[in-house]
Length: 179
Image (tube, rainbow, N blue to C red):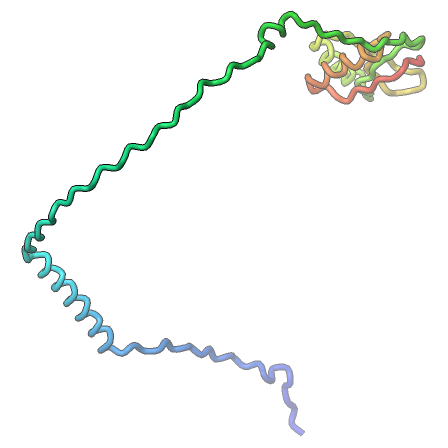
């Protein structure tokens, strides 16, 4: 029995078949060209002839329309606004919520850093905003914390934190000082 190569079987080079475009008949395109040229020449012939002047159109006078009665516009109403005079003399009464003074003061921490140079840089950024801060290091810890405060009221600490947020110094946390 003869050995056959089954791997290459069926894998021949594919012959590409070109689809032929349908041929146009040359007499059609010639006829179209003759019609277009003829139409162009006819148009030039019509333009070269002087047209006869049109017959005069009889002028018919139109009757004048009746004038429409005009509507009388009433005068504008008088405005009854008096806020322009009364607003400067008004007084707004606001009752502020009474603040309680905490026995333990509030502090704000604006970062904890591994090196003192990083903590000093943050302290300098805070000093440029007009706030004073200090660097604290707990015994047994290798972290340097940048602390602002103490504040009697939490509202004062919030005010300082918002000032630092506007200067893109974040994050700062507020809590009661237990040290």
